[in-house]
Length: 230
Image 1 (cartoon, rainbow, N blue to C red):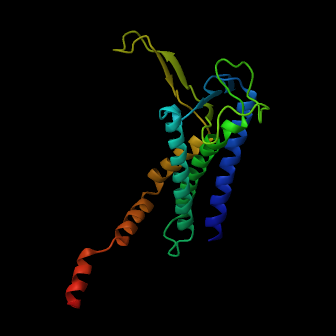
Image 2 (image 1 turned 30 degrees about the horizontal axis):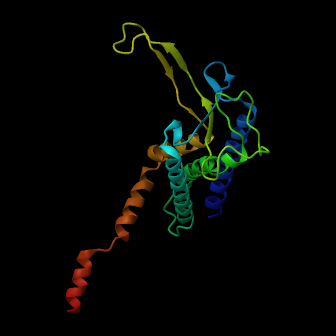
Image 3 (image 1 turned 90 degrees about the horizontal axis):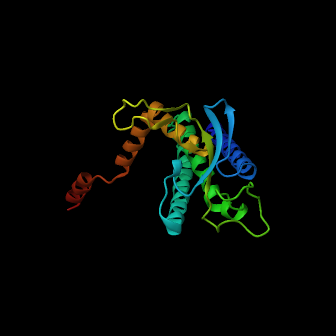
């Protein structure tokens, strides 16, 4: 039981601390779209921000942004409750590895929620037209209100960056880049947790499905009881 509590807690804190340290450093050190090579040309820190889901997907307008942030808060609340139920499961049917994978998803969601909820009030604006890094707690206030902050992304892996040969149908001569999306540590945690569950812990998913079926009332048994009572 102690390992099921300690290890997920340490993992969540580690992901959150690393994620926020890197985001705050990039936000207050880089100008918007500034890049810095880490390992040659195939691993860069490239500062951008997005208003929506991972990899820049967005919901329209301020109301869409607010709805997305509130949805994230509800999802994190559910994940927190789910992890607690896994840890306190008296039958111990769930392996520690599965709990850690769910904890990674929880930590990643929390990391991006911190940006969405607080960054608008804590930092000045970053965009193409501003040539200086953002300030932390600017004297004239942040760039947005509560729940309307932008998520900071910076991890870029352009492992292949080339132009396709002219003979390639439809896309010949166009630029091809792999891997194009720019993301953050929180996104990586979510992806790692989901992939870990799908690859190594499908049995736990089947256990969840079985538990849900057992929790549903058996109408046939209810009818039999009612007939006996009559």
